[in-house]
Amino acid sequence: MKLEFLDYLIIAIYFILVMGIGLVLKKKIKTGNDFLLSSHNIPLWITCLAFISANLGAQEVLGMAANGAKYGLYTMHFYWLGAALAMIFLGVYMMPFYYGSKARSVPEYLKLRFDEKTRTFNALTFAAMTVFSSGVSLYALAMLMKVILGWDFDLSIWLAAGVVLIYTFSGGLTGAIYNEVLQFFLIIIGIAPLVYIGLDKAGGLDGILQHVDAAKLHVWKGLDSPANNPMGVDAFSMVFGLGFVLAFGYWCTDFLVVQRAMATRNLNEAQRTPVLAAFPKILMPAIVILPGIILLALQGQHAGFELPVNVNGDKDYNMVLPLLLQKLYPSGLLGLGITALIASFMSGMAGNVTAFNTVFTYDIYQTHIKKNATDRHYLMIGKATTIAGILISIATAYVARGFNSIMDLLQLVFSFVNAPLFATFFLGMFWKRTTGHGAFWGLLFGTGAAAITHGLSVAEGKGGWLVHAFDFYSATGQAFTIASISFIVCLLFTIAISLFTRAKAEKELIGLVYSLTPKQDLKSKTWYTNPLYLGMIVLAITLFFNILFF
Image 1 (cartoon, rainbow, N blue to C red):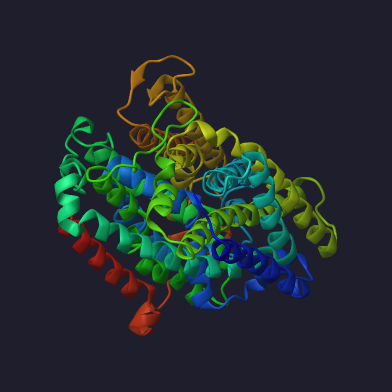
Image 2 (cartoon, rainbow, N blue to C red):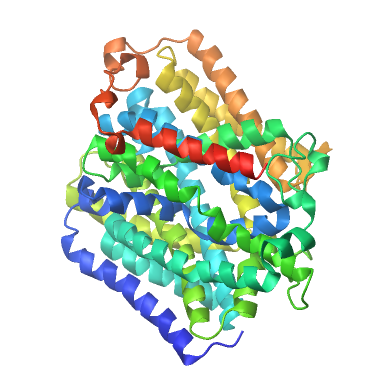
């Protein structure tokens, strides 16, 4: 790919700008609370955009374009089934517990609701998941730099990690959030023209209908059997595995996104953050999924749009966006498009690192290593953990090289961590009889069930490390099934063990369990400040899209 001086200039300005934001905010970072929690002082519109952008990393911008080409419009379910409902549930029902309990993190809420061992188990698994996800973003960025700029893969990894380190180390969570807002607008401005140009070259809607396999142009048709759709799943796996378990497990319990809502100034803003963010979220497929569909249409009409193969000899769907940028963007616009991709990877990596340093500092270090140190000491630990998180991310970046779709890889990771965790949260918030012993052993057995299921199954050459007992049509179908099994196992073990162990007294659960928490008067709020009314509008729009693309 040939870049001109203007392209390099745009990329250079972006790197300077993101590092500059971190260095400017450094003057305001004086305490551990400032560095790790932004002192709960971020405006609503900032937290809404950061809430979206924290998820708008490599896994979405690169991974969803890859899934668009690989699975077609079935990928829309990650938004219209897997995001909208869960984001509304988080805002209306779960944020009052997170924000009202004054917990500094999701694991700390588990400590308040259950006990220390449940908190520690979640803190360890979440810390591992965040640095792994951060490594995926770093891998994607280094791959992009290698393919587009011709830079050495190893050099690209260390350079990108260095830039993220500068602004997260300097500005902490606040630096990451403000950069996420910048990155959100860059992604929209940089990718939207690609959709317009690509559609025009593909012949518009008629070109897509004529040159893309009809099986990839539906959202619900073909879900009667995994054999009848390119995603290799059935309706139950889609609705329960993705729409309920994985979606609610991610949006409602993953501290990476919850942390953005918790940075707001009051409870009402914390509730509205995910609900307001759902409006642009359900429109994002036009930016991140449609390029994959456009590539399929272009492959049927023009030469030069074939995807390369990865190190395993499989078609590398992760190259959908880089290939379209190379073929469709002129100089200047090319630099902007590349900068948008770089911004998405930076966003994903920085979001994971800032969540990692908060959980490690408060839920692991302060809890188990040094309980009563000064705030300055925890600030130092938070910064040291930021460096460690970046270094671990570099190591995990190399693991991601063997997957032909990073979204498949991340869904697998989420099925191990978020799926059983949501079962624990669901019971803990709505069944006061749930005990700490039940929650801990339920999480342990649920995670173990995920590992065993993966070890017994194979999809696209992945899994089967115990015994090759059965096959899945796709890696996505495998991840959805693993998530469903881990959720159900965690739910059943938690219920069974809770029935034979002692629960906390009701007075200890006020503000932590739905039935024992004073209900908010949402009816007195105007519609645009009422998260429930706003959520109903989102659901109506989502329902319309599902019917339109049935």
